[in-house]
Image (cartoon, rainbow, N blue to C red; front, side, top):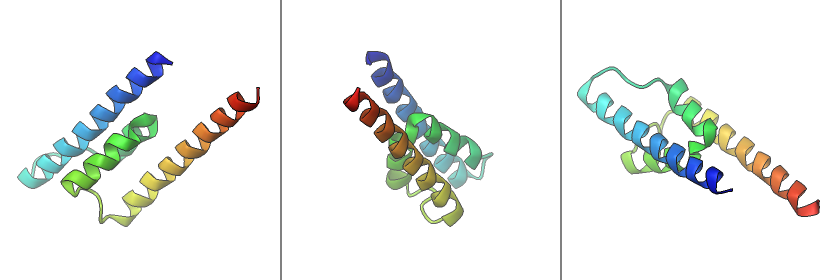
Length: 91
């Protein structure tokens, strides 16, 4: 369980940092981080860090297609963790 907690801290820090970096690159007109990569880091457990990065830097908050994918990932993660919790609870 300790490993999972450490993993989630690291992946959320990376997600937050990538959103910040992409916003800075957008401002400076440099090469951006792809939406696919931003969504992938969220899918691997960085949803909270990604969400905080989106809100803090006002990044990707108006693009509907990105938000739909992001919230779809969030819903799948919630369902996944609920299923795991429910199974552990009843076993």
